[in-house]
Image 1 (cartoon, rainbow, N blue to C red):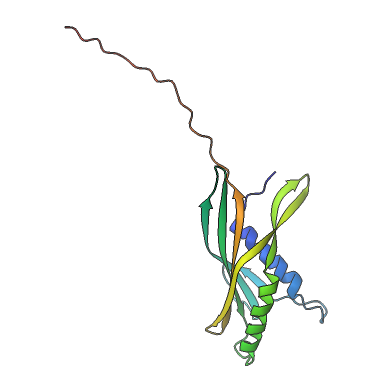
Image 2: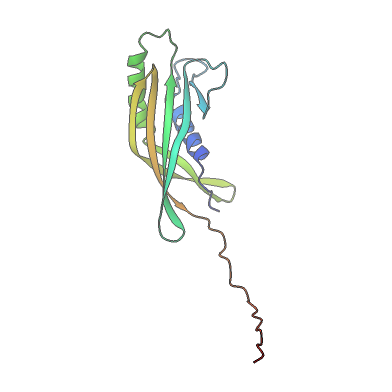
Length: 165
């Protein structure tokens, strides 16, 4: 059974990949910056990531297929007192270029097992704006559309009026 693609699945796949690659094993227990989806929770403590979807476009293909482009944004926030943060932002931006180059997206079920497919980023960039790293990545994904059943023709009755001459 095919799993329909949703933007939240892409955010989850990105967060999973980032957590695996950014894990700091030099301390016990290992430290991973907190990751938020779509909005920052009240009382959030730096450092943390905010992952969100900027927008999604769809180019229709043949009958039941289409290409979707998901524009994603990752913000990285550091403490305001970290005076070397611009250097750390640049380093993190470069790390994210490698980490988010590919993600594993859930694709289908085979029994109880979820089969994933590798999705490659097709455009990536980052900038530092107002002391926050803003990282942008696009994923172009081919999807199978689930279309509603077409309306079938129904029988039409015609009542003729007879005209007296």
